Amino acid sequence: MGVVKTHTFSGQLYKVEEVNRIDGVTDTFDLPDSPEMMILAGTDLKAFHSAMHEGMEASGMCDNCLHGYEEIDSRLPRTWDVARFLWRLGYKRTKK
Ligand SMILES: [Zn+2]
Image (tube, rainbow, N blue to C red):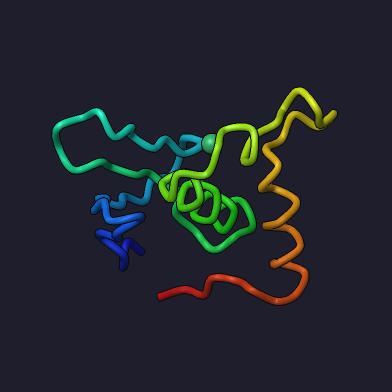
């Protein structure tokens, strides 16, 4: 795994690290170094969602657009349903 090492979101270069745990954390722009992004390793839906969610976060989408936990009973971020939708349509990550 770990094919994508960096990616530019909205003009900002991110270091992309694949990890086995962690829900995914994206650094904020006020840090001096190039921001680092952590996404879940693997090919399952959780890993797929992690990359999608963190990418949207790095693109600067608003917190409530992505999360909105208080409005959703499941306490999952809003992006979870989008990930499931794409997954059902057949968008999946394959082993590299
Ligand atoms: Zn998030």
